Length: 421
Image (tube, helix red, strand yellow):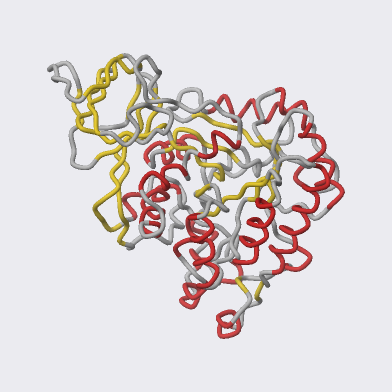
């Protein structure tokens, strides 16, 4: 492969070319030259579009592929294809498979699945055996076999003692525990956020307390253990405030928000569209504003897809019977660009897709001569209507269809491969 990118803006704060527009020549998967102007040869694929940017490859820290067990929702072939078309070459896979990723054998299966793809599969090991929240899983063994962090994924950890032990365990090797804050003793069978709109619809609501109580508890456990903790699925104003205070105290805590919770509030559910039935629940407008402010002041470190693809039969039912989840990876960048354009500049937005490298102790690609190519190419400006035909995931439960979104993904360059046409 020989590819020449013309006048591309570089987003890499470790590079001497950061925020400069340069020509980049890549040959056989290696950066051969970066200069103000490089004369193209007929042998090179030339990428020359208005306003394109390039950065180290993006990482998504909250992604579901349901193979093995529920391949009809998403298998590795469809999930990895959707991710690379969305600009992501690093995926942190939640352990919610069947059987779950709670041992080194299951990790190896997931890691092997990504070998022939342009996407690196980064496995998140389960905290508890079978994701049942009772007995601790083989955390150290999974760490030795490549698990980069530990979580029960879409399951919450009700057992405070088990969460405490997990925080102690990972401290031995500077590992990371990821918490999905949802007290299921409170949320029970709730269908949506508890508030005016749940009352209007007559649907059982879930109070924000179910999330905030768990955030508060886990911050106390973190302070006690002096370990490392990351909150996924943050959705309420109070949660943001609690994490902000914890950071100011010097605790080693980080957080991510799913892109849907930045764009939508619970008024979307008034249409009874089951594509808006999701966890964490869509909250109120004041919560959306607080989440955006949390991104701006770095209380929230990451924007994640929160990708949970589902089969049409799991969504085309009565609202109360529909499964929770959204298929979002195909437009995660465009949606994030749309909702953050007034609070994050271009550099800050890209950082929200790169911060995972630091938090998960992964080597981040660099834009420099001699480096192996592992980059995302994109456009920040321009708008287009997101359509069903833009979805590469098996899951078509995507509520962004029909929305006017900013930006575009041009493609990924990974080693000697690219999907840039």
